Image (cartoon, rainbow, N blue to C red; front, side):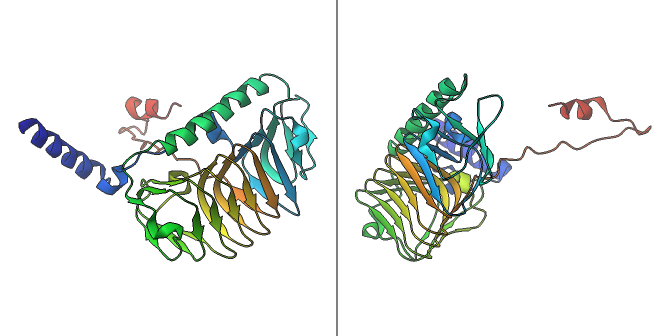
Length: 275
């Protein structure tokens, strides 16, 4: 009992000192490994029609670059990546020059590991919430599980602080209806939202989605749909004049520069500025 009380007091002190809400500690983020270097990563292809805008790197493996269509790929002189007027970032494929093939093999493996890790989380906050229909709900941070598909016919809100994590385990398909949005409140961040989907993910026309899609099958985005996050699929990603933007990177706090009486930077502070 004494040890338990001590542990509890230690946790309370830690929370007070860091300012982290207890609810934010309920789930740790899913580790993406090197798969997190891509805004789109698939095993069987990426196809687009219309004017699509991608911000971030994308890749296919173990399939070749011929499985990337609609982007007008331009090979870099290194032979290691392509570029496209539709992509702010680099495009990789398994048939590009070494070490790209081996790096993509690792990335795909990391994607599958992330999917399995998300699927293995235990003790959900809710199971089969709304019988699979979560439209109109406001969801607090935590783990949610469905033994079926999930439909979002009207806006759903994810509300929590910036360090809060949501993990959605979906045994069936995921469908975001036409014009519907996933809304973020209270500082919630795309990088901390994980949708682990066994079936296909479909984002209908004009919908707006937030988070990391870890899909065992495919991701299909209809005309004008937008994603702030990542689409990591174990088959294909199909696009129709869409926008996908990778999450903003975490920013390292900058140390304060301290000057002595002569105006020189103090050694301890200056050394902290060294990368």
